[in-house]
Amino acid sequence: MCDAEISNGGFPQPFTNSTGELMSLAIESAEHFGLDLHAALLREAVEVFLGGEPATDKKARIAQWDALYEQTGDGKLEWMGWMISLREERWYALEDDLTRRLADFARGRAAAT
Image 1 (cartoon, rainbow, N blue to C red):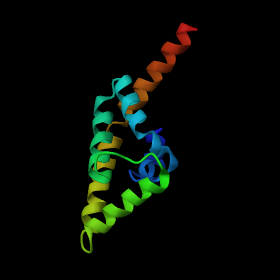
Image 2 (image 1 turned 120 degrees about the vertical axis):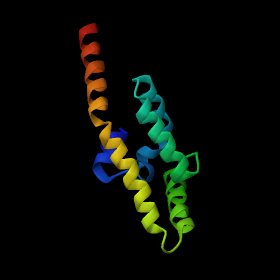
Image 3 (image 1 turned 60 degrees about the vertical axis):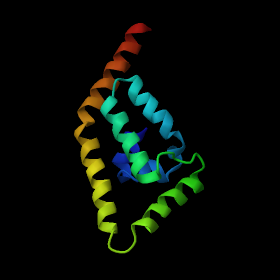
């Protein structure tokens, strides 16, 4: 879920779209599949971008995101862009592991049926 969102519009996507209400589940799911680096990166992003706890209500979560931009103030939008880009680079570097683990899971499920 997060991978599709991030691939669609960068790291802000899962926080500003309706799927953001499932961020805690996304972190738990990453851990379930042994994707500890993905889970850690998502946790870190939640801490940096939303103060540690994403709102489950979309409007409230967007307000959290907007508040971050207001806190950065003039001249700090470059910092915000850098923080986003850094996480995107780290996420994309993990993509092969995500694809492999999910394919392994799907093959295991198919073999079990």
